[in-house]
Image (tube, rainbow, N blue to C red; front, side):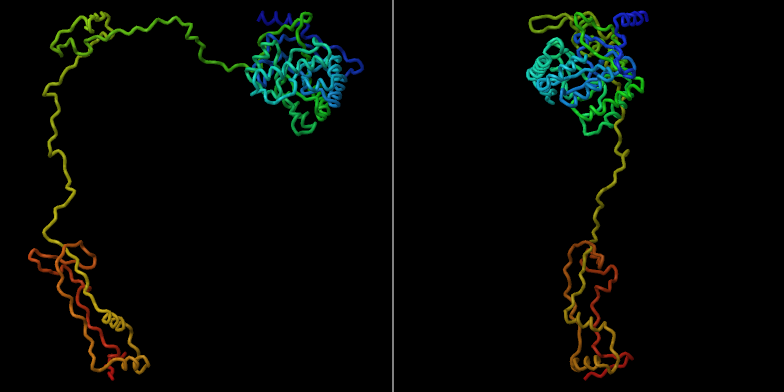
Length: 467
């Protein structure tokens, strides 16, 4: 607690909370509330969008930054708006743009704004660019902006990576050169295809959600120049203040601050202590030889006596006296009375898989074959009889000769006995003597009945005359 009070006293003495100069002719201007002096070597990476630290701002404090300029007339309109409100901002300028429009670089510096750099040509490949190529982009950008300003000391050591496409090797190079790499805390997305009203809405919404931080804008877009007056108006109405950031010099010492004020993204709490195993003084592991009692050697399991030393070739290695396992294990054989009996065969019930075959065999006797002529006559006989005197009856009587008689085919010769599977149509049982006896009467196996002559009967049952 005393440390915190002492630090705040130092902040007040150092002028970190000094109110900015009054804005003549604009009594309702937002103005710049205070100026923060930072040392790039102590905090090389700032901006919560990419890094853990950010500027030590209080609640409702905002830092305005502009990228990619200068470019007339948009940059000129932005400078006019800032001048009307007596606001100081930070401009991250591209080297080629500064070479093309050095007058705007000089104007921004003359009006009290901080001049920083944004590479030489704004390539969007910093995340995969080799370090030597990235170094040329960085150094050429600083040289171009310094040449355009005409005062090398007027350009701060602040740098912002194009597109915020960072990589560790580039950040390490920037830190080694004493540069401070800036990221952002919130953006207005003014490089997207949105109008000035949407830029204002996104900027204010994100500022309100966080409460303080670094705002990213682009002074090369006309819609950003149109949205800036409305953004300042909304910040003023909501009680926000503008903070200006400059680099520490031998004549301008850094602003006193606490380390906790720079923390923008605190680390997640760890529930396990961080222990460096390499620094622990641990004894070397020692494994003793096992006790021979554990292998049943001392219990008389082996006829030879237990030696007190081991013979390995020409050397004799004595056994260690230290016992790792104090309690030996005895290997005791079971007595015959304690052994389990062998199960008897009748304990298990076996089910025969194959049934024994009997002496009786079943054969399949095919049906008696009939001639085609007999089959056609049988089919015709099954038709209903036509009435007497009809044309069909007379025509049938003429076709049948009186002297011809219908007979059925002779029964087939006796079949030879053969073994076959059971048939659903007919089954016969074959005795041992070889005789065939039908087991069940089957009308299909009996000889066919002789068919009736066509036209032999009329519908009334009287025999018809055969002509």
